[in-house]
Image 1 (cartoon, rainbow, N blue to C red):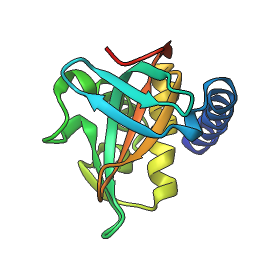
Image 2 (tube, rainbow, N blue to C red):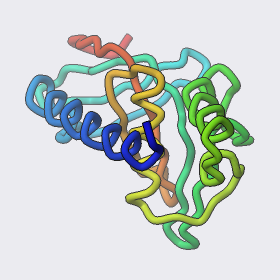
Image 3 (cartoon, rainbow, N blue to C red):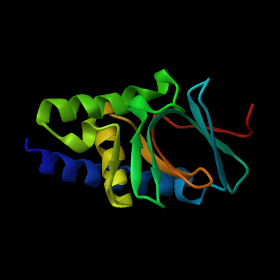
Image 4 (cartoon, rainbow, N blue to C red):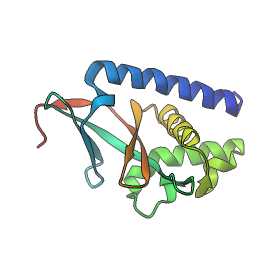
Length: 153
């Protein structure tokens, strides 16, 4: 499968996943989010008071000011266990000659950063991807199976 078609299919798959998460538990309307890298979990506070929890991987960070994306597979702020899905993208890039996937820091659009997350989600067979504002940079992540809790432990 050619790379462009793989990316397009990844984007469409992520769109379908995101719509399903929005409709079933309210991903798009979460009030707050938090990642515990030590536990490898992401937490979303939902409007109805529940907490959604899932295993998380960090694909990378995007700086809107200079349009740079720093891959999670070599990011100084990302713990190694949370780099696995981004490493899959790097390996795919090495195999298929995609320089954007194999260069530690690249200058791209926000849409391209979403494409990176979509590819990671597809390669890792993740349950979805999420972008969060970390007070300047945007963090792109993939996540696993969602658990809904009445409150955070």
